[in-house]
Image (cartoon, rainbow, N blue to C red; front, side, top):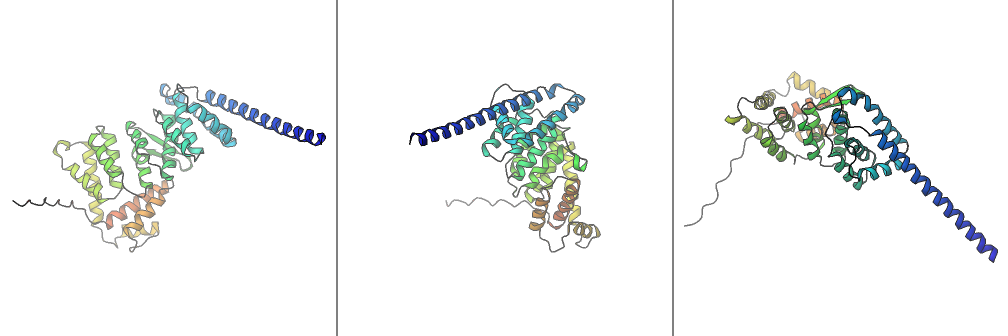
Length: 323
């Protein structure tokens, strides 16, 4: 009897020792990952030239590669570091984007988004920042506040190496909107346009509104072009040029060779409804490529060619009170 008890005690001690050893090994691995993270992110991109940032970029790629090979350990390490105050900006920025990219956990997403808000969007941070916006948008996350940070960077540029594609501020800003299945962002864009003073940012907002192809956006842009105090500004001229494109497309007959060619490229026909075109376009924008951007242009032109010019509905007079 005593022998059986002793055997069981010995068994549990062995298991406990093994578990303790695994915990200690895990803690040591996390510490090693933390050291790796701190060493990699030990620089300030906002204080570096573009050439210096370019030289530092491979270190970030290599860190992500190591995280891919040992995700559990590196996610524990990056969480541990992101919740601390006083870290390097690049750790919050790139580390936050790493957490968002490699975890579907809601708490991780919240921590990642909180962290990346500290990005100054130096050149080295811009491409991964766009990919983060894209990833979150595909997941259905509202990234409006994160998108507006792009407006402070008139020379924003995201590079897509697979397609040798460079996205400027205008396209990078519009992309997440084009993935959405609704247009609830339009009132916020309209409000943003009223307070934005930078001409490059204004044109970017105007483009995002126009490419939505929604009547309320077109009406808002038309009202903008009618404001005398804004007449002559480059952004107003840009809005007028886009509205002219819309109206010119509406003048084309369905059998016009331009429209026929676009339908062939998109594999749609004259019977494809506006709702179907918009949904096909939305799904197409789940890819980031030059081909997707060509299709975006074709879908947008087809939608405008089938959309009547919007008119602002007149507000009804309030009912009169009986005397």
